[in-house]
Length: 272
Length: 274
Image (tube, rainbow over all chains, first blue to last red; front, top):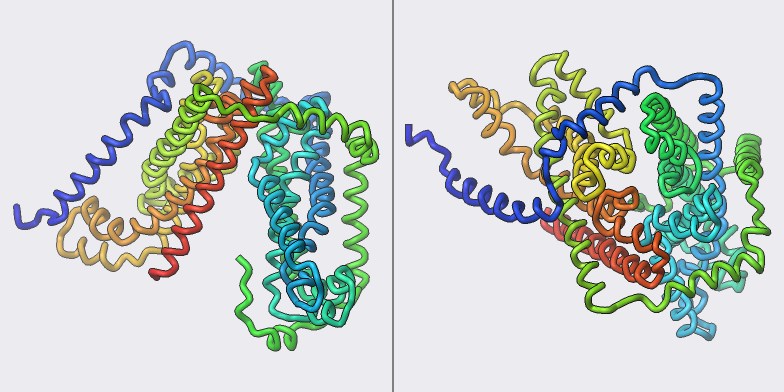
């Protein structure tokens, strides 16, 4: 029998033991106590809650509330994206290397241009580095509970993100039409409209639509920190432990995400 | 992300120049209408949002965040929360990898049709409920703290990894498995030495990729009470300790950037090797 043994068995055993030894202290840090799951009190509360999931609550009063929250969520994502596009387009144009007039040469201000560009890049990094939910939490302190905070959160995070990707798209275009126009002395905006937009517009639009889909996903959960929409409704129902409401909200949640998924897929297919 | 391998002349010759057609104008108008409707329905007044007064309020509020609190005891607390965040992400990802593999076997159709349908449905359900929703549910289930976050991430990640694993197993050529079975190996060791040994590199790379995302997620799950940096941020913000909050935000940014940088360099290394 010995000859049939796995020749690597010793090493496999050794590495498994190493992994387990490393993970054990982490279990303590994360307060990993599976026994909590089987605690009779917890089981009772959770059981009651889950039993109430069936049937989902669908009386007309609650459905009206649900529809309102769903529309609010969609509107939040759309408005946030619109603001983000508005903010990010000039940012992207300012930092795209293809549109650097000083880099082409012949004009002054190379150092200044570089400085402004790096400063804008750092601002973008900060905008998109902070998670949307943290932004939302902070905007809630400024604007109070409600959708305004969610819109601003999406607008800020996504303008950083969009500006980065837009400028990448503009830079990666292999043609030099925009640079040629700039060399001939045209303005930056004209060079963008006639030199870059015809080539990149599909890519730009399809990325924007994809990001809109992500914005819908995020604005669904944005309400957990008080920024309105479906999440806020869910948070309230969850705190009151009314399982029927939670289950119908969950269904709408999933349907909304699927809808955004499908819509963005269809639009992007059209753009190809 | 952006591939530009096709020479420009090819692309230009293949693609018709886009005219401003009726369809484009119609779509543009529709998009603008939707945007306008959104602003209108939310009763967002842009002029009000960016008015002089509200900008001054924003500035005043932003000023309360500086300077960040960098006293040693607070930094130690942040370090603890950081380690907690990493622990949550690591444990939940490993748990999810194990559970995902267990669910992937039936989902790849190794045990017949009914288990396949059931496990697919289960994995899809786990995957499509967002981490934050799982986290609020788990907070109800086991109370506030990092354990809730670990469970929430593990549940969602099991759904994602299980599906990825199942697809990998399904696409795997069964030649080695068949060879081992033909010479008389029992099904379990045939699976371990015939299939798993061939796909485990790929499974590991999926797991690492999810770990990267989970680190980021673990940092914000705390906003609903599931431990780590996020819980600390929520706590300090509720007490109006803005200076502490700005330190936590800086720590979060550093964590995210570190993860980004490491995964980018890891990936470019991998690309060089292959």
